[in-house]
Length: 442
Image (cartoon, rainbow, N blue to C red):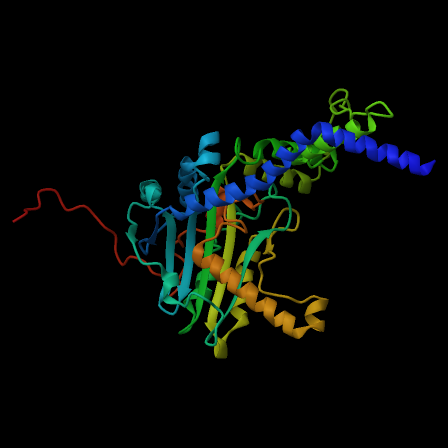
């Protein structure tokens, strides 16, 4: 009896596949070749981009706060496509433009660089000059070429990582607006701690930091404002927000449900999930006066962040030194710089999976394997830094990045104000000025 039931089920399945193979097989082949095609066409597009490295020098007596740099990042949002056409995405392999803002320290000094596509040079220079008219911007050679293509080697060792958010991207980190003294209304420049570390680097030491940014948001990116409002509502009501399923997840669930009902339809009626029927009846009254100050601060922080322009961001740093003088203290000092922006109730930055550490049980059992993986991770993060790789897939496939608003970016990357006294900071010795009226030319 049981064998007959099994035969009947297999027979039904075979018959169903016979009727629908011409639908299922093309779908399977489509998803297999889609990834191959996108990998090829997007890699080709990115390789064709002509990149330039610009060094930025600002005068010594700069008085502008990070607010000016926030306006620079806001201007760069003009490069956003606001939704590419199907032709551009599928046939040309276009991706959203991205820029790399870099802070570099070595025994020669502290340098500010930006690596950009050549066709976006006018946009970037105009954005910087509009806020820093006395700055000097000049094209220069890529500083990464001063070191070997592959590290670590017999001479140099390296430590590096990408940094990610501890919590959901909607929770902001501590920004420059919080670094203010109420007594005499002076601002504490958070970048001073890292410039102080860089100014003390010895011969052979290198500390490199880069912030790769790409405009994001509706319609091609995440629905930041919508997700922010949902999170705020859930915090006010004291409920945990439901994470919405992605389009691909919804499509897979629907396809599996269809195939399941197609097969079982020979012996029972199909059963379809009833989506959209469970809705709240009426609006829930919330007494805002009963909210704690902590919740109000979080809500205000989230609302402030989602109201600003946002960028997909890759935060990466590497520390390089000779093996005989490698100082882990400089790595700790760099993490100390990023810890300034941490808050217990909102967000902070932590090392991602790219960190050059390997301390689990397998590392203790197999020391050789640990050494192999450590070298692999070090070489990978160094290569990713040199090539300015945007995440694991370099924009070839979709992936989640930390999303920073312009205020957060300006906090992490801006030109030090006048009170920052880093000895080796590269500044202009004087301002540029117009010649006096009536100056004779001969």
